[in-house]
Length: 495
Image (cartoon, rainbow, N blue to C red):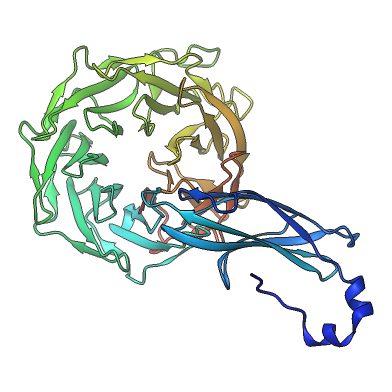
């Protein structure tokens, strides 16, 4: 099939003109013609134009006639495209700098059960107590407003999580010591509070996570200025969406906790404010009740290096890879990434070979303790191929992509991405970077600081090159804060 034809003037020029025309040659190496594939689909193609000395100008992928889903101003492309199940007669087209057009057709069948496409992005606006929402273009990652004005949460919303299907949204609030809960309208992304919201936690909310079964929600709270307690609160989700405390909740701890994660199998919950202590629990998958694992808090040895704080390393975020084999945490104080193997039978933690991995982005020392960057937040892409780390100020202020070896847990640095412009600073919260459910995109919070003006919140987004780990900004990024706020703290991408 073809989407571009010779214009009438070109036809009138006659055979001599046609003989001199240039026609790019397009070669598609992935996907194979007739292949059955899973979404997202990896498109790899190149183009050349033997009769055009100035070469190729651009290439584009069409998922269907007139449906251009990806364009690059180059003679090669390597990108992932998210498509729903079905058969597609795709076209990869190229233009040269002499006016020639060429293309290659590839018919593929996208299997059911593929990774889900991204649908909505939500963020918390701490200072105005609101939640902002965006629609996601699943082909190119571009964001647009849902059309719903920012929704009231409660005082100081800091952290945010959704269920696995993208039907419900949960927000931990600092100032009001409670949890806001919403239904997500699957057609437009609008939020509606569930019956009885908001739900008390007894302390300043510091993180929130949803159990893989979607039946339970867990929140860490902290004692701040004598208000509240250091706890982990567990809630079961009632049929009407309201939250009911699980047996034994809240669970008291002796220190504030900021990082929180549950393994994909739903057996274990881990919470920490940094090495060496990681509080670990088994989860009763019938009731949601927590039982401390033997030896909890488990121990992670802080990095031992020239400029390290060898007795403590701050964790603001924590993730478990999609196989459930490894717990991964960014050590903000020492500029390293910890990777701990999880014993499937006991939940115990053991450092993998090479951990902690040096996030060596800047010359040291730059702070009191420093062996590299300043990793605040991280995410694992849905393909389990990359760990993507956000470094904030006063250190590197960049995003680093690591190749993740799912067999050994090892991290290998692949690419470094600077901020989109000189006055953009990446987010300082522990929920500032999150991957989408298809493995194509990653989104990050930050702010713009202009001299003599108040900081303004912003969010940027990137497409992830699955081969190289490099990040390319999605169209129209970065995006301003929906409520024009300077304090965007939590971020979630839903299917």
